[in-house]
Length: 476
Image (cartoon, rainbow, N blue to C red; front, top):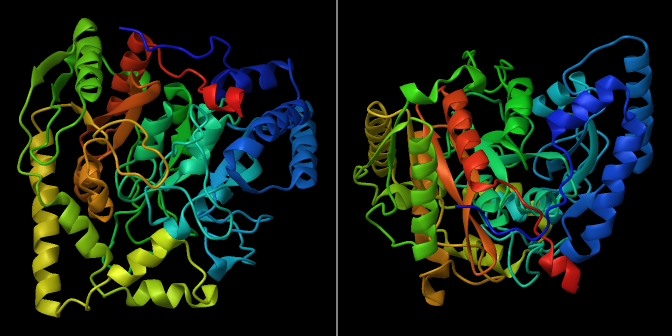
């Protein structure tokens, strides 16, 4: 089964661009200029970029070329990278989609500092919803980001700007942040690839909102987004390891996908988690991914997941346990200038939870995490849906969800479950519906990102992987 394609012309992977840089076939200055040109050619329609500094980026590219000529070797030397606007990068305003940070000019976050030390060059910050708190990338400052396959549809959120640029084949790799699906949902909607690492794999120091001392605890994870699975394997090691600032980040060995023997793997798959039914095309995508693994010697079986009915409730209860006090404090500087969707979220907070109820919630949180991690001990990977269907129209509910239930987020229980579990998840394209991509989640045991990446590479090869999604741009 092959995905339908919109274009057979694709830009090279980051891995290939690094080979060309190291071989002297292209300079970093040329690559930065080329990538900026591609971004500028699509962004008027997409509205994905919120900040750039071309002069600074080109100056850094020139320095990178000088370092290479001088014999210096770094894993990402001269590679252009884009970053979600909720992650601090020195030299760029970082708004997090909010007027509260309209003029915030930060130092580098931990991941930005690591990318910079590895030789990467930051060329743009990309759009996200205010406070990274929506599955629709739209905010009061910059407005909505659009899907390159159909401008009337959303690329998802909260890392929607990155996903839209990747889907249009405009940027090479990006950095996102995933709490309840903010890497995985846009990746699925846009037909690209992305990984939410195991919680604690990558420090989130320098991302906003800060969550480690809130009900969110360790639910927020920074991770790479790309067009090719091999590029996730290129970037993830650079981001990984403790910074001794994020209390949840730990020193954990990161394996290599190429060391994984498919014949030794046990995989399970399901297309219904007991909460909301998914589309027929989504079920076909899950089945296609499972078949691709089976054809490579993976032992595959249909499975029934444990009870996941509380995943969405637990996720949002943790987020709003204080009745929204922290959120309102963080947003004082916005002076009430919010997108209508975010305003509805603010108004939806209830009373702060009594301490006894919060302790009970923590117990349910850890119980579900333990249950899912125990479930995974019988399998090396689990394949399942990301959401109920493809990217919906702007401000519309996902497939199968009544519009009046927009703010219940039931379609995202599939991603909320593995956010609560804290397990590593790779999303890879595996199908199509109504001309829009459909991805699947490939979940691995804790700290075994390399196994999920190896399985994703198999699915990518078998089903065609990334194709540029530019139909909407062609019509704009």
